Amino acid sequence: QKEVEQNSGPLSVPEGAIASLNCTYSDRGSQSFFWYRQYSGKSPELIMSIYSNGDKEDGRFTAQLNKASQYVSLLIRDSQPSDSATYLCAANSGNTPLVFGKGTRLSVIA
Amino acid sequence: SAVISQKPSRDICQRGTSLTIQCQVDSQVTMMFWYRQQPGQSLTLIATANQGSEATYESGFVIDKFPISRPNLTFSTLTVSNMSPEDSSIYLCSASGTGITEAFFGQGTRLTVV
Image 1 (cartoon, chains in turn red, orange):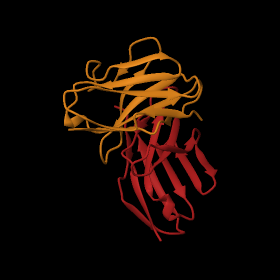
Image 2: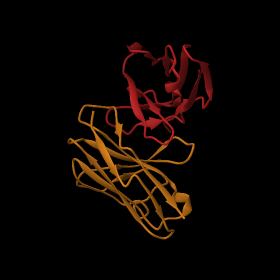
Image 3: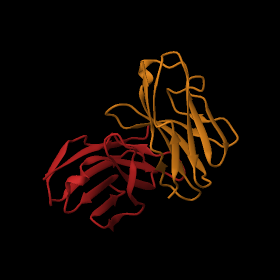
């Protein structure tokens, strides 16, 4: 059974702080990892993808992957109230369907 | 990224009836998927819509309840049959292209069964 685990939160951070979201996965064959942001009542929006060990930065977002530890994280720098949402971690191998975690609810307090 | 249009965006249906949800992608895609998201929960894969052949269903989902069509590389439908209040959920269409592993989502269909 392929599983992706996330802490459901809520994770509360003050505005301007760094938010750190974590995810682990069970399938060692997973090759591709994604972070989606989902606002309440909306569909998931892809914000980051990462395929190799290390860090990948895109604006205020940094994704980190450690395949040996089967661990993926997302850092959000200078957090803004508009970042308040549920963040979904997902993984797959090749063109297989994404397996999603339950999501972590982030609340950025102004 | 692919633009995915899904309709209807929401509907309220009587129990025992069926609803067909349409998903249109603005470009040819290799893979199309249907997910369900129940209130406060994450996404659960219903099935992979295969072009020109029967859909591949996940455990707990059956063709009689959730028939799926995919007549070409840009369009798919999901029917929720003989609905009960337990089918109230958000249904999401997703697609990914050849050699592309990330998936994009339509805006979802919020279904309420009364």
